[in-house]
Image 1 (tube, rainbow, N blue to C red):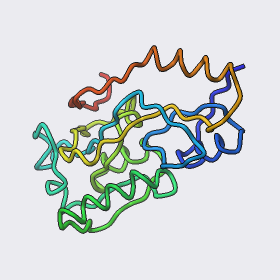
Image 2 (image 1 turned 90 degrees about the vertical axis):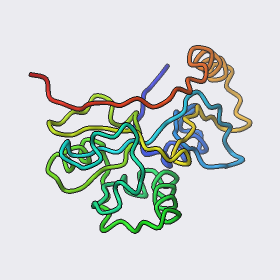
Image 3 (image 1 turned 60 degrees about the horizontal axis):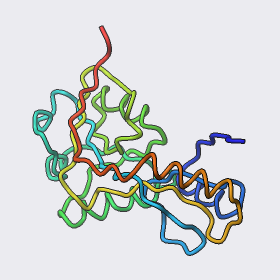
Length: 189
C-alpha cells in the first residue's frame, strides 16, 4: 500500500529513521548513518524576481544581483540545509541581506514577490505550477547552490517491497542532471 505524505525535509528524514515511512524523496538530505540516500536528480535554486527588477532579463542570476533586495527564503525549519547554504553563500560573497522574510510555501514566496516585497530564492520543484503576473524565474549562477535530490530509506531496514520499489523508481529516474532552464511565470489569459 502506497501512501503519499508531504512534510518538511527534516520531518521526512525523521519519519524514515523512526520507521513511520519506508521511503522519502528529499532534496539535500543530511549526512546521517541511519539513512541511505540514492541520488536521482540535481536540484538548482532559482530567483523569483519582479519582472521590473534590474536583473530580470539576465539568463543567470548572481547573488550580487540580489544584494540590495529584501530576500524571501524558506524558513530554516522548512529546509535547514538549503536555508543555511544560501546564507553561507551570501556571506562568502560579502552580502548581508537587508531583511530575510521566512516563508513556508513557494506560493507565499511568489505572492510576496508579485507584491514587490522582495526577491525569493527557491528550488525548482517547489515552484513548478505556481504562477503570478509580473514574476519571472531565473536560475542562480552559484554552483554551490545546487543540491542532490535523493530517495532515502532507513539503513538496515528489512522491507523487500520497499527495496523493490526503490530499485524500480531509481531505474525509472536515472540521474537527470540537466542544466537549469529559465521559466516565465504568468497567469493564463
